[in-house]
Image 1 (spheres, helix red, strand yellow):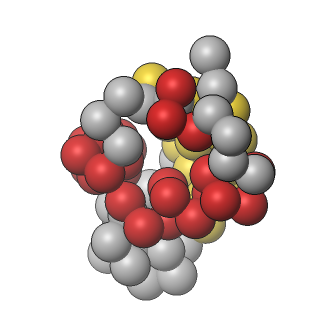
Image 2 (cartoon, one colour):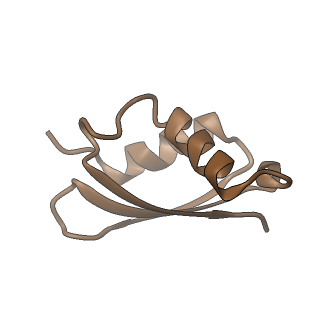
Length: 76
């Protein structure tokens, strides 16, 4: 079962309310996505910490319903 790009965006925005989120379906199969997440709340956090916040927002969907997510994060 694949995960919809809109659901990925929604989960990230719920978990990181100040985030600007862009999702791309890389393979057209609903399993391989790229996400760019830009948020002022990432300021002062390492890239690893930023990625951890995104994964937490996805509520354990990585590796299950969401097979692969190429992630880029940063501050505005």
